[in-house]
Length: 485
Image 1 (cartoon, rainbow, N blue to C red):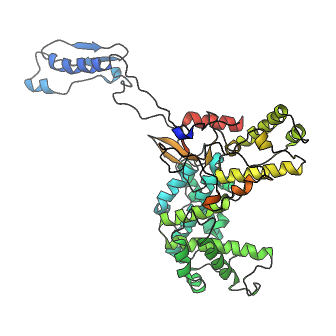
Image 2 (image 1 turned 120 degrees about the vertical axis):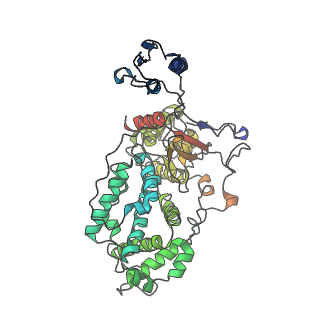
């Protein structure tokens, strides 16, 4: 299943595909307007005249009679409404083809949410695009849900600025959550965004965290330390050598233990229920940070922190793999039957969603481990030439797309359409769990131990052999057809 970047040194692995709508102006369109313009100056003193143009409708023009005064000569030309064509030939080029999203109804607001949602309009609009209806199910775990969660944290920060409380009570949370989702859906977001991301109004309430007001928070937590660690989060270091995350965890433990003696002196958690309290208090910490930072700083920090969590897991679902086990068992499985069965199974994985390069590594490792537990002893990835990109959704050109592990957003406008960036399009072999190559692909290994990626002198990215895939309406429809049919 190896396809794509065969000559990275020539820049062949970096492609840019765009759909364009070419405008063709009908023959005679310019001739029609020239005739009309000329006729205006030739019609004085003549009888009634009619201009006709093929496929362009008929125009009836008023001409003065003997009884008309000189001033009437300069009255507006009378054009009968009944003969005006419904649509004149276009005279200016139209923009490129772009996805058509059916117009959504205006948001229905409860009127009971005390926060003006327009105050965070930029964040709401970004969330609506990242969770756009056709793409949300494909990009949910990587782009849509992290952005949706970040938006809610920023909303909590805005609420605390007005009320002094870092959380919402259950009734207000339900009203505000309903208003927020209604505004998102009216802006083009997926209608099932809440269930897709497993986020509810209760996420705004602080749950079981005992500290919920701004005053109590600042009396309990070392806020200077928290701001120093989390105002600017390094996207390249935070996931491997965290700076902000441990400070947030420390603050959450302090909040959870203020009114409880169940924590030991070293702040260790003694029961699962205590972990739930600490997790709820982390939400309160995020709300406080959202209040202190501007919207962009808060959004960037929250997205980076979420990406660290997202990239540690494999979001794919592995169903029955008995056909692969049967075809590939033994010390020397037959290449043809084994690889055919394996490729058929991987095709079912490709229909699920787009994943990041780090998630693909996790998925390849998990899938290989599951096969090993069922008795497979052969490195099937090497035998069948399976690449990391084979675990992600394929575009219409059968080229695997792995999203960047760093936070990214969907881009949408009427000129460039819908687009997002795919990374790691070169053919990096999927590592079999028991192979030595697995340790060399550790996402937090030193730079010297990571395998070198092919580079291109013509590439716009330094040391990157990525492609930028612009998904317009046709490609989006193809993806959805692949997914559901």
